[in-house]
Each structure stands twice: as C-alpha cells, then as structure tokens.
Length: 127
Image 1 (cartoon, rainbow, N blue to C red):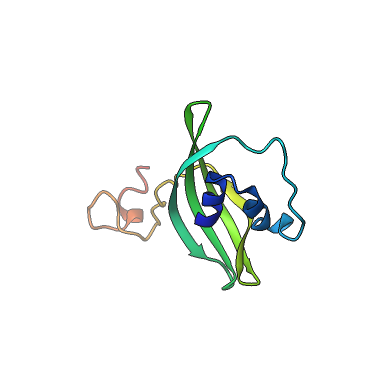
Image 2 (cartoon, helix red, strand yellow; image 1 turned 90 degrees about the vertical axis):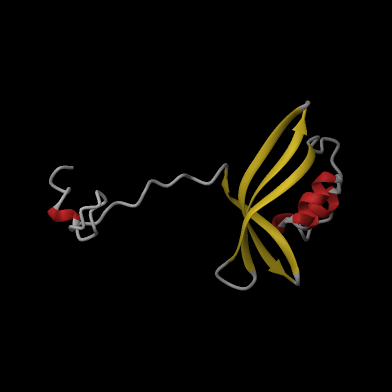
C-alpha cells in the first residue's frame, strides 16, 4: 500500500500499473491524461489478514491537493499476493467507516438503566 502511494506521489504510473491486478500482466503505455493530484500524505487506519495468507485488506486515507484544495480519498482496499508481490485488486468500500449503532439490548441482558434486573423484567415493557 505504501509503495503504491509513493508511486502515485512521485508520478511513477508504471509501478501503479504493474501493481494493479487487472493490468499487472499487460505492458504499460503512458497516457497523456494522467491524474494531476499532488498526493501529500497517507494514513493507514487498519491492515488485516484475509481469508488466506495471500490476501489482505488495508483501510486508509490518502490526502492530496487538487486545484489548491486538499481532498481526501478514504478507502478499504483488497490486496492479493502473487509471485511474492502484493497487487491491489479492488476497493471494498470508499468513504469513511460506517458508524454502527449501539448493540441492541437482549431480553436476558442486564438492564441498561443499572437496576441489576434483567431487561425483560425492568425496562422492556416501558420501551
């Protein structure tokens, strides 16, 4: 992930091409309309192993300047290792991590009011 960010920041689009799984085996041909974003920093929030030793996910925020304005790309990405090289496969999610609501209280859980009773014998009927 960091190597791909560095390649974007230094405009080494050949490396980006070679480490993107769908294009990794095709020859790289420079394009006149390459991205113009000036990438400034990378924050890796989480890196986790996948279902096999050759897969992983990385959740990150990449910051860059475009037309004098700072923008952020937030993504959870999937990587796969082929031939000893990690390749970017796809974005699993773009944008910030979804906020999850608090877990629901079960009938037999202690009541959240602090009475010490089970929820079903305390506040369940009041809800």
